Length: 206
Image: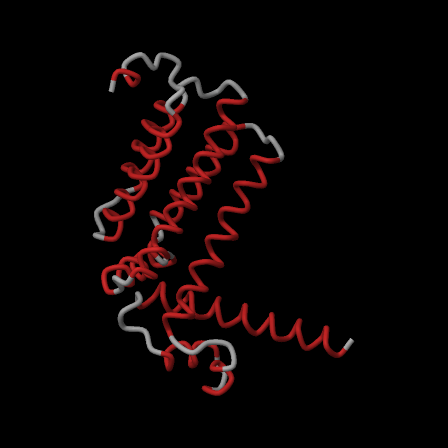
C-alpha cells in the first residue's frame, strides 16, 4: 500500500513539474529558460526537481511528448470509435483555431527555438518523431473520412501533407503577430472544402 502511495505521489509530482514547466516554456520560449525558472514556477526545492530531471532540455522533451500524447490520443480514440468524420474534422479545426489565436498558451515558439539550436542526430530524430506523429494522426483521421464516404480523393497522402503544411504556415504567421480570426476561418473553410471535394479531377492531375 505504501509503495503504491509513493508511486502515485511521485507520478503526481512529475505531472506537476511538467505542467508548471509548460507554462514557463509558453511564456518565455525555450532559449531563455533556466532550471531556476522552472523551480520557482513549481515552488519546489532544487534538490526536489533534480530527483526527476537533470536539465531544462530533458524537461522540455517530456513536456512536448506528454502534450502530444494527450492531443493525438484523443483524435485516435475518436477514429477508433468511428465517430462522425465531419464532427471530428470540425472539432479538430476548432482546436487548431483556438491554438492559433492564443499563441501565448502554445509551445510553438519554444519548439522553434529548440530545433534551431539543437542539430544532433538525436535532435533530428526527436523532431522527425513529432512530424511523424502529426502525419500519422492526420492520415488516420482522413482515412476515417474515406471509410464514411465523406472523402473521395484517393490521394490521402497529399491531403494530409497539405493540412499539415497549411496549419504550420498559419502557426508561423500567428507567431509574427499578423493572424486574425477571419484569416483562420477563411483558410479552414478552403481546407475543409478541399478535403470534402467531390470533383477531384483537377487535384489528381497535380
